[in-house]
Length: 457
Ligand code: ATP
Ligand code: MG
Image 1 (spheres, rainbow, N blue to C red):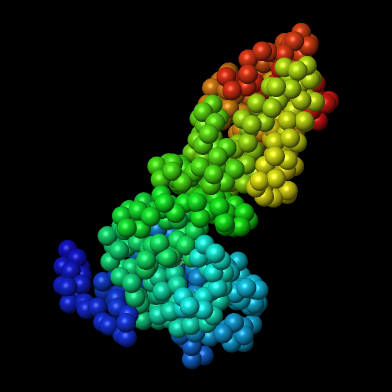
Image 2 (cartoon, protein in one colour):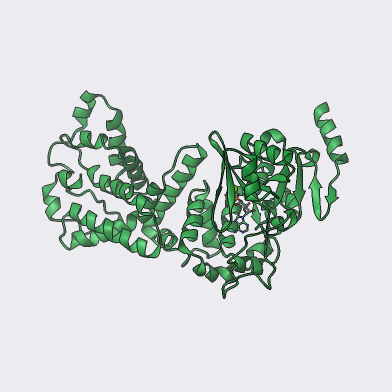
């Protein structure tokens, strides 16, 4: 009680100072304590300050702490050049070519240190014909570094030594009010870097804060600028959305803002398959849940889910044309992957895992003889089983199949023997192998009809 009262009195008397053009918010107002900063980030700011430089925790970490969220990582900004930073910390290295950063290592923790940068004045800024900024890698001071950042909430500088926040764009108040607001003229800022439109969607979804009206308004008319963004960068941002732990909200927001069309082939795939949609939304929900429980998620699993209904529809066509199921699956996988690769760089390294997950789906239907035992020993069994559960939940396959495998995994040997189906039922079904189902995949066909175990392996 008394503590609360004192805190309130103290807060009331706490004053915001002005230093140059920055508002300096004291600890008594914002309440972010030095102890909330990671060990590595404190060591870096302390070390740089002791060597006579300015150093602050910046960006997402300060914003997240103000919103009572746990920061993903702690970035540091300083007026020391990369070489100077490197001289202060033995375990550090300079990375990056276009803009050089320093990675400082403290055991498991890696702290990224960036020298203050400035935005180049418009006359000599290098932009492409759409106004996209091609170069923003000049060193600057703290104020300039704040101005080149995207949102006011992302432009706060926290000094762990004094526990003060330096704020040039009223980002503290915006964060307190739960508003995500772009710094400067939104038209200019989106033209400079169209990815900021996607960041606006992702950050507002992830943080559960409101996108300021003036920040949101021009997005509808400017979205075509996203076509000029290099694909690798788009994939990066889309992956950040899908793995943000709030992918469902992100997708819903993208849709509401009509940002999804033509945005990226991968996302088009997600949005425009009415039949696959349920499956994909479940996959995303499942990913969000796993992330909220600190479980790992694999991009390959997610990609496999995103493309599953494409694979299914090609597979169905082929089977209709008389191709054998397993052979058809191999052709369908290769075709869909090749098609995606042309448009979007899903890294090759995920191919093998995606294919394994897809191929396992056929084998889940084989529930006689030694086959289920062999399947359990597959290193990818768990991922394949999780995938199967999503297919059940989206009504693509009968729930019974998922339940069977759920039980079989942990059942005693005696129970397993009881559960096994007689040869020729379900999996072996030779009759079905020769006479594939007519139903198109989009209506919920399953892939496991009459597969040949050896061929699938
Ligand atoms: P997250 O929590 O997802 O990491 P973040 O805001 O920290 O969110 P980062 O991509 O790690 O995002 O970027 C770190 C900081 O760099 C941001 O807080 C922002 O100040 C700045 N920044 C990142 N991308 C841009 C951009 N496209 N334009 C301007 N500033 C950017
Ligand atoms: Mg970050």
